[in-house]
Image (cartoon, rainbow, N blue to C red; front, side, top):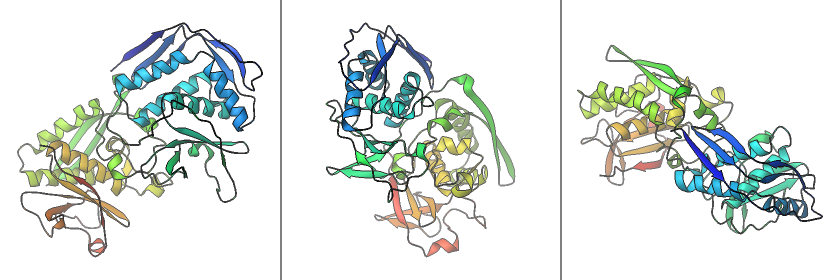
Length: 401
């Protein structure tokens, strides 16, 4: 939904003498587009703060003091108001921090300064964020208790901190490069960051494109024309590999939902539950090309359901997330996610099990593999090469009545 956020405040400025940072041009207004919103701050009466210091406790401390006295109180208030009113997931809120920092201190002009702006605004709006330095490399971490697999982390005082900007450096050999954490206590920095995803942003209707998805089911060709927004790819470009529970429950954006789910419901309306789940399994299996992450992205990557719909090709984890979402949305059946060493699939609980069931906590689940295999696998069967392998139940879904 298109919305304008407006603040008009006047703030008195005070600049301490002898600081390392340099106060430059005034910042009267801030205005930029943010995934369906227009962020608009007028009468800011702040001043841009440059950074010409050294990445030490003293240099960064001086920058922080300048920012405190440069008149950004109105901007910090607006960021807090946006978060309190809209309640975005932390990942989406961090995208707002990035856009704000980019507007005030463009990344292309000075990467160190841009990173310091992000660190300052994230801290001032309540997140426990820290900086690690090695020469001219500046890594930006935030406290997070979740399992994140493909980005650096370190422990401090018994707490885990994960890196938010590692992707900007490509690769760092931490055995050869020793980083030092800068010590800066921020009163407002009280809580951690979560990668859990619960809602998609409501993007502008004009930015949606139509995509055709088709597959065959029982000798009938089914085609769907759905609305997708490529901006979703940008939002989650650097989203890390995380536990399944953090993103398997992520819903579709409203326009994508409205263009797909009613069509699927209509297709399965006259089917029984088992046949309908089989239909959804084969839609997820055959409406997209299969390609492993190494070929598709050059690294491990787990896609959200909407990202899988956007992508021309996907792997087993991506299809498992989409199928999990479709079964939950259309039939709301109990499910478990099975993680094998090199494969991820779904098992669904029906009124009576199909094939050889997976027994978990005394309940019987039937395998529904949404990934294409060498032979066409019906419900209740898994390819022979996986039948004797150990698996982990990575996620359990129990419907809320």
